[in-house]
Length: 453
Image (tube, rainbow, N blue to C red; front, side, top):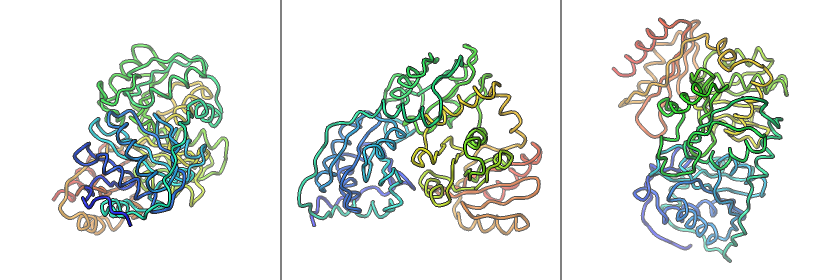
């Protein structure tokens, strides 16, 4: 056993599915070296695909990652600058038995971390929990390798990726659609120019320059304040719709032709309808925070709606286990079984383009019939005793239909709520929906009073 160092790594950087921390206080080159060695050693991986996003700390952390992988005896196939969806594609294309991407997704510029996979881009937590990975990396004790791994020549997969997503979506041109796209200075600035060039469409470009300092706004389209540039561009240019990608390109949010944001669950329903044309009767997963309208639309389109937990590591596992065809999250992650069971902002975008071309209606008209209930945003509350509050809510609302698939969901005839604990903080997250606005407001106040008392 080789012991590199005994310094303990901050456990808070090991999230439920990924690794993210502030550089250099929480994550640095030494931490990345040890995580890489620990991950390779844990499963005996032999061929690891390595990529990174545009963050300023990427180069040195990638170098440390590659040293850790090769010191542990595994070969590295570098792909350089990449979006997360293209990285997942590369793990499959290049036959990696594992993948490590240096990225902190939509987090602010000071963060960095990892998204890691096993073979077929299956999330790393299916092989080793982040808690166990933290323990091994912190201990710094690694089996000695008989020989050092090799770093292969860099693979350029961009053109092959663009071909694959266009073929998967079944689309080769965008007609005369006028589209505004905000890539938030993130990795969409690598993918989208090539994609639009391939289909011969000239988009309205917002913050397409790749810049890991995110000089214009946070690369998180879930925060409505980050959409204002996109909304203004759509209205000013009379665009058919707008799309906003997050920092690493696995999430995409939409605004309609009026500049109004479309919630993630409504996009799930619309794409599910389109996907079910290709595979009638398929299972469609939707996260438990989604509107009642989502399972209703899936059923109406001939599909089988299946509720699922929140989080990409859990959803991908459930999709594979239950044979899910497509899945959507309120957080604007969308998952395609036909593309390695991964979440892909580009494929989601292409499916919305395809939907608008086939329906011949504005996005606002397609969404309007789905907006038949009244849904709160996700409301966070700091609590001292998470388990105690969940138990109290179970008692108070014992007359409803209950599920503990993810936190606590309670359904009544005219309203429902879900309360989920945060994975990392003493928080409860509330989502609530009702058939009338008045009931939504009344029940939100009622449930929050119990949570916060």
